[in-house]
Amino acid sequence: MADREHFHIVILRDGLRLVRHDGHWRRLQERYRDYMASLGPFTADEALEMIRSEWPDVAAVCAKAVQDFAASLADELSLEPRESGPV
Image 1 (cartoon, helix red, strand yellow):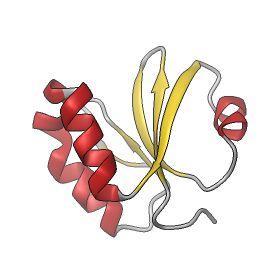
Image 2 (cartoon, helix red, strand yellow):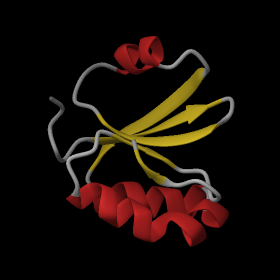
Image 3 (tube, helix red, strand yellow):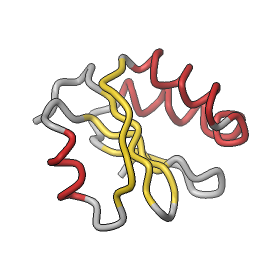
Image 4 (cartoon, one colour):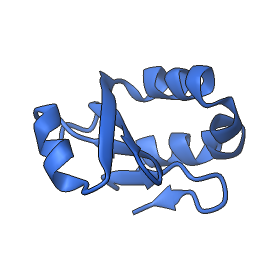
């Protein structure tokens, strides 16, 4: 299980994911077929600030979902404005 405080923003061809992950970025690359890049590790607050800075349209819709995800036991959150929720 990933460290509960290591959050990475994973940039995919079809969107963004916020993922708990404490390993090497190559493991993220292997996990996601459409992987483009990842940012992190961050604390939950740092990740939310990065999302607000780089993707303000996503943050406007998903900020509460990010906070809920950080407090949950889920390992992945889709950062799609229409369908955000823990996976």
